[in-house]
Image (cartoon, rainbow, N blue to C red; front, side, top):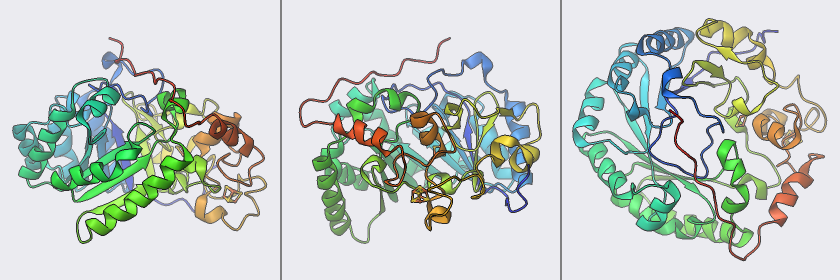
Length: 364
Ligand code: SF4
Ligand code: FES
C-alpha cells in the first residue's frame, strides 16, 4: 500500500553497466552480472532520466560497473544536464583521459567520484586484479585539469587499512576536494570475501587514530569522511537514510531498487522501469513501501528510541544474515541475531588473512 508520508526522491544511482575493468574482491554488485546484450539502450535510459527528473530527482549519479564503458555516456550526461539535474560521475578512472574528462565536463558532469584502491601501487593493483593504479593517478589529473571537483573514494579492508595516512596524503596530492574512506560493507561478491577482508579490532583502532592525525595534518584541506566498520559497533548505520526515503537505484536492465544491494533480498518483488512508470514504482510499489517509515518494524526496533534515526539498520544485511529483511539488523547489539555478527568477528585473528577471490569479468 502507498505510504502517504513518502516524499520525492532526491537522488538516483544509474548503474549503466556491470562491465568493469577491475575485479575487486569487495564488489557489492550481484553475484550474477548483467551481460552487455541485456543492458538498456540509450533511448531507454533517456526516458528513465526524464521520468526521474519529473519525479523530483535532482542528483543523478552515473555509475556501474564502469560507466565509461558505455559510449553513449556523454549523451546521457548531456540529457541529465538539460533536465537540470546535478550530475555526478562515479568511476574507476580507467579510460578517463584528459580529452574525455573535458568532454564530459562540457556535456554536464558536475563532479567526479574516483575510486582508489591503495596508496601502494602494487597492493592497489593486486586488489583491483589489474594494473590500474597509474591510470587512476592520471585520471585524477584529468579531472582536476578539466576544472571538475574531485572526491577520492577508498574502500578500506584488512590489506589497506594500515595505510590510511598514506592514502590521505596521496588523495591530497591528487587535488581531492573530498576524501571518503569507507570500511567494506559485505554485500554481493564482498560478502563472499568477508573473512579475507575484515580488519582486526586493533587495525580499526589504529585507523581511527590515523584518521584523527590526518584530519589535523590537513586541517583546512579537503573534507575527510570516515565510514566506520559496522560489525564492530553495537549500533547499525542509518542505511540509505531509510528505505525508499531519498534514493533509488536503476540497474543495467532497468530494475528499480530501493537501494543498490536490494537485489540480494530475494523475497522482494522486482520492479522494472520498462514495465511500470518510475513515479508509480516510487510511490505505490510493494518493493518501495515494504520497509518505509517505521510501521513494518518488529521488536526490538518497534519501541526503540533509535528507530527514526537508524531506521532499524540495513534491510539487505538483515536479509543476507537472517533470511528475513524485516528483522533488526544483526549489527545492532539489541538484535536477537547479533551472534551472527559476533561469530564472524570471532573468525578474525591476527594471523594471515585467508586469500580473497577476485571477481571475474561480465560473461559475454
Ligand atoms: Fe536501531 Fe532497532 Fe537497534 Fe533500536 S533495536 S538501535 S531501532 S536497530
Ligand atoms: Fe540495502 Fe542497506 S544496503 S538497505
